[in-house]
Image 1 (cartoon, rainbow, N blue to C red):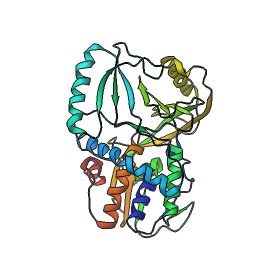
Image 2: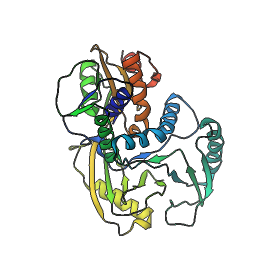
Image 3: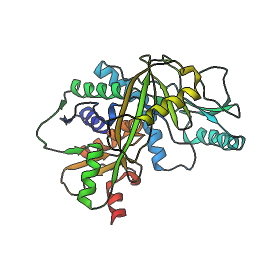
Image 4: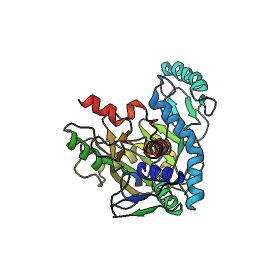
Length: 337
C-alpha cells in the first residue's frame, strides 16, 4: 500500500514510475480483509496524530479519485465508528475528548458521546453510552490495493513482478525490508506482527464500523463483514490461520449477537510491518544513494497511506522534506547510535 501510494503521487506529479512487486499485488499484508481507518484519540496531540488526521481528511478525496482513475471499487466509505464507554468513570474523559475534537479536528470531523441507539448494530455498553466519531472511515484493503494498482497503470505507470531497479528507488518491502535494514544497521528497526482476520457472509453496507474489546467489525460495501485482528509477535507461519482466529470469531459473535449464524467465508493471515517506533518509517535510505524507505504501516497503514504518498513524492521529486521527526529514518539512526 505504501509503495503504490508513493507511485500514484509521483505519477500525479508527472514522474515516470515502475512498481516491482515480486509477490503480486495485494498478495501480502496489504491484501487483508478488515480495513478500519480509525483515528487516535483527540488528546495528548502530537505530530503522529496530526499527520494521521490530515491523511484521513485527505482520504475523502484520495480514494474516490483512485476509484475514478481505476474504474474499480475500493470499498471506501465515511460511515464513522461506534465504540462503547464501559465504565462511568470514563464518561468525563470521553466528554473532554469531544471538546478537544472541536479544535483539533478543525470542524472537519466530530467525536460525540451519545446514548446507545436501540439497534442490533451497536456495541454493548454497561454505561449505556457510546462514542461515535465521524473521522473514522473504512475500506476493503484488498480491493483498495488492486484499485490503486489499476490507477497507477491507467496513469501510465507499470506494475510488474520483475524489472530493472534504476533511477530513484523506493524500498517499500514491508517486513522483509525492515529485516534487511535491521541486518544492515546491526540493530532492530522493526519486525513483523502477524494478524489474523475473518470475512463473514453478513450484509450491512453503509453502516458504521464497530469497535469493542479490541475487535474491529467492518461492514463492507460488497455485502460482507470483516472481523479482526489478532496481534501476534511470535508465530511459526505468517500466512496460516489457527485457533486464535476461531477465538476472534467466537468473541465477535458473543459481543455482537447480530452476527450469530453468519458463515465464515474467508480466513486470512499475514505479517504486518511494525517499525520499532510504532510509527511509519519514511525518508532517505541510510546507505544507498537515490534510495528511499517507506515502511512500517502497522495497523494504521491504510489510513496513513494517502499522505505518506504525498510527502514521499515531495521528498523524491522536489527534495522537500515534510516527514514528521518521529517518522524519519534519520531519527531512527540517531536513536540507534
